[in-house]
Image 1 (cartoon, rainbow, N blue to C red):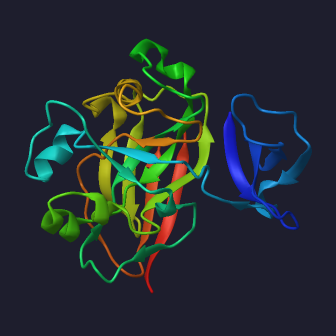
Image 2: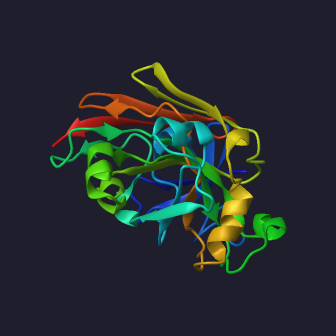
Length: 254
């Protein structure tokens, strides 16, 4: 099932809906734990697709593809390395990635994102699907020069607009073998597959839930394959994941 969060003309607040073809059936409330009966159907072209969720936290996994760890001059860590992006980084399909004046080297990072659908604490790997609502595309935008100079990752990952998500959530999806890519202005930069993840999506849900409680709507970014590179003013960045779709964001300086 394909679930989107949208803005509807004449409606004050964002609403969720189920996409079928070129239609969206709007529902009341949040889609988890259960999706309510539709209250209206609209043409998808008549609504604006927003970020599929505004989470309480975005938990990110670093160096979870061996080829990316190598291109960054390191190895896969013996235990997962995680960090958190604030929810103020989240933007949706078509929204602008804004390059900050503090950085001169901002990179794209295409990633599979997990959307949590139930409170998750101390979840075992074989039960991870019980708390996963679905999956979406993500771009873990990173100020690489600040990441290197700061010696830790918070500032480089946390600028407003540095976490594009979308365009929707796919709920019926096996995350084990999905092609994932990133193109900038139509030029392929990253080309990987989730079967190359060092630690799988389900493993990371379990590992993280044994450290912190995950809430419905929280997002986990699972890591990026090799090929990260600089984006500049005027670029258009597209993340594509098989069986989910494409997430495209223009890049600007303000």
